[in-house]
Structures are given as C-alpha cells and as structure tokens.
Image (cartoon, rainbow, N blue to C red; front, side, top):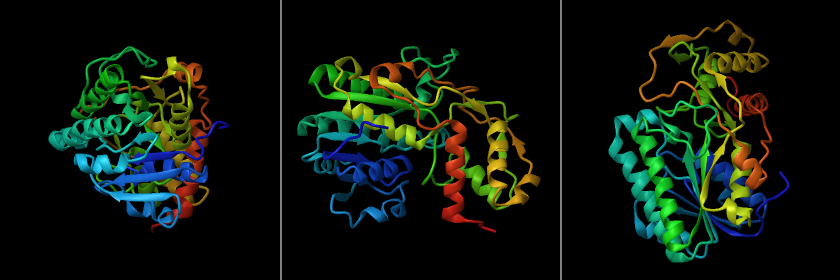
Length: 331
C-alpha cells in the first residue's frame, strides 16, 4: 500500500480488539498520534501492551455507552476509526439488548461527540450482515435485504445514523462493510470466537473442529491487512464522491468451510503433521447464518483505489504462521 496516513491525531475505538489493535499498530508506525478508547469487555490488554510506552499512544479506559468517555476521547482528534462494537450473530441472539446498547447507543454517542468536537471524518466498522436475506451474489452496496439477526439490525442502523449525520450536520462519514475478517491477534478462546482462530486452536490441540451444517456455506474471508488498507484509504481520500457512503471490504472471492478447513490443515501440517489425521464433526446449521457471502469490491477499487494486498490463501498462510509463532503447540 503506497498511501498512508501520517502525522495525524486519530482515535481508534475498540482499539484493544483484533481489528483495532492491528490498525493502531499500523498508525503508530506511520508516526500518527493515536488515542485508544476501550472498556476491555471483549478487547484484550495484551493486544496493546507493546504500545503503552509509545510516546504517541494514549489509552483511555472507557465505554462508548458513556457520553463523557466519548467526549474525552475525541478531544483534538481529526479522524475517528470507530471499531468498538459487540460482534457475533449468536451473541446478539442470546443478548439482543446489550448488543443494541453498545452497537446503536454507543455508536450514536460517538457520532454526537465527533460532531461536537469538529472531527474531520468518522470512519466506522459496518458489516456484511447488513445484506441480510438479499439473495444476489456478489453483494453490491446499494442492494440489501432484511436483517437476519439483532446484530445485523444494529449494523444497518449505524449506516442510517451515519447518513443522517452527514446530511444534517456535515460530518464526513465512511462505512466499511467488513466481510469475515481474520488474521493475527484474533482471539481463539472467546465463546464467540470467529471460525478461523477457533479451527486453528482446535487443530493445534488435536481436537475435531465442529462445522455447522455440511460445510458448504461460503464466505468472502478477508485478511486483516486488506482491512487496514481500506481504513487508511477511507481517511485519505479527497474525492467528494467517495465520502458519505459505504464500501465492501473483502477480496472478491469466496470459500466454503470444508475448503477452509482443508487449507488450514495443509498449512498447519508443516508444523504439526498429526493434524492431517483430524476430521471434522458436522453439527446443526447456526441460526441467523446466511448460506453464501461474496463481495463486489469494484466500488472501493474505483473510488478509493483499493487493491487487496493479500488473497485468501496468502492471508491464511500468514495467519497460521503467526499463531504458531505466538502460541506454538498447546499440547
């Protein structure tokens, strides 16, 4: 990636989370002054430990559900990268109220604080779940269906609020609809862990991964470096047509769960040959899941100059290498 944000004052909400911590790391390398706002409900302190002594890093331990915390965090900031949210479709089904409180009330608090503080641009994590039951593939930004989970409802409401604030108050907003992001620092141990770190963890422990359904559901798995690139391009663009809209953040191809598992086994077997003997368990399909997900990334390519730096297999290989170097064999 050639274009990079440099020497700016930025806020990353949810900065101790998987995406937030990776984004902070890249921003600090580029000599930006970075504030992190996190309440550590899902974010991990070890994700930001290496930043704590950095002269350009400030940690605010606070909650986006508290307006005063939001006001404190945006003080003097030019760009907000709003990553804080309660992710996971199953979590939202089990606890829709907390998901709503964090993802909608917290989002609105951050928008209001950013507007009041004169923030230049508000870049936020949207979600591919917004496409809901729309059957079309690939997914195009202006064609969505009805949400299939409380989580999806909250992420769609985020887009509606951002659009209204742009039109009503003039704050620049850009939403990034993430498609199944994976990579280094993603938590394998959470109850609601994403499929890739969970599979890696189970395989390294000699356990049989559980695949929901027949394993034919497919996703446009997106490596973390592609997501970092899109966040920075969203901050850097001066194209008026590129602002106050939403973008797919993906690779533009998809792979099913069976293919994912076999590729993980292939890469992990280099370190631990015994994983070749592991076969999956097939469980019931998960409530709220869509069968297939595939993004049209032409809008991001045309308006922002986005070109994925990593394909699915390239990203998966780097992810496996990182997990082995970080955790080694847990057996």
